[in-house]
Every structure is written in structure tokens, then in C-alpha cells.
Length: 241
Image (cartoon, rainbow, N blue to C red; front, side, top):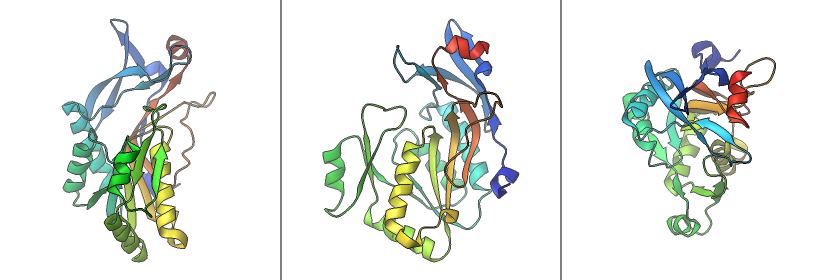
């Protein structure tokens, strides 16, 4: 068992925890010792629905709870030199506040939904990474590592110190995989997965049939505070199982 699984136990919510009020589905969770009601939204289509509990840190209550959870998790990590995060206007205040509290330097990656815009922010030889998070399946996002960020990353790894990637939610892992791809390109042979931590407020995914546990996480050292069920297909059928 890893050090993180010994120190931090995530709360697992299942489809049967989903409730309705006025025909609107929601999931009640405890996050950062606060009770939150997260509305469920269909991020798929009417023909092929994909239901997720909507975690929006632009809401003050959600931001405060998420900040508290991040502070607790980040406080359990050791030998971390810096944090990096994909740029997101909705989650930056939450992540910034948590890093300030634990006195962890935070670097945000270049990011945009517009390719020409991110090209204008980078040098000709810089790598630009494209990804599609679950909330944006039809419109790609772009990210890039600025020169100063690359310098800090190489310096930390050379010194044997860790880097922590922070995001608000891990679902399909598209965002984290794009960042890890960038780190592998930057570090080359110096890349060591044992020196990369990943911390997110929530992990979303489909509960395995039969054993009732979340999917196995492919990323090394992934820590989250709550597991939120993702429901593919008929919501009522999933709740009644």
C-alpha cells in the first residue's frame, strides 16, 4: 500500500447516493468538512447521456470546501519543490489559496481554447499540447509550458525534489495526461514518475460492476478527497441498481 493511501482515505460516493429534488438530480457530498449539493449534468447527448456531478469552484461554498480539501492533501506531501496547474479561471483562486496556505510555489501553464492565441504566447520551437476534457468533448483545449516553468521543473527534478500537479477534478485524465506528456518531453531521461504527485479535489469515474470500487488509477501518486460516480446511460436505472 502506498504512503498516500495510508495517510489519506478518499470518500467514495456511488450512483445510489444520487438524490432528486423537484425532478432535478443532485449528489450530496462532504468535502473539506463542508456539506455540498452538486447538481448532476449531462455532458454527453440525449442519445448517449453521461451524467456527472458538477463541481464548480466559482461558487463560493464549493471553492471554500475545495480549498480546505487541497490544503489537507498538500500538507501530507513531502519533498515537494513546486506545484503546476493548467490555467483555468474558475479553479485558479481555489488552487492559489491552497498553495499560499501551505507555502508552496505555484506555476500555471499557458492555456487557451484558441490555437492562434496560444501560438502567440509561445516561441516557435515550443511544444503545444491539445486535449479534450470530459466537459469539452467537441472543442479542444491547448496548453504549453513557458520557458521559466521549464527551467523551474528541470531544477527541481535535478535536485531530487518532487513536483505536484494540481487540478480541480480528475475524470478521464485528459488534462493530467497532457501535462505528464509535457513533463516527459521536458525532462527526457531525467523523468521519474516517483517525483511527480497528482492532487485533485475530486475523482470522477464509473464504478466497477460487481465489486463496487472505483476504477484503478493509471497515474502514479494520484490523491483525491472524494470519488464521485459518473453515470453512463439511464440515470434512474443506475440509481435503482
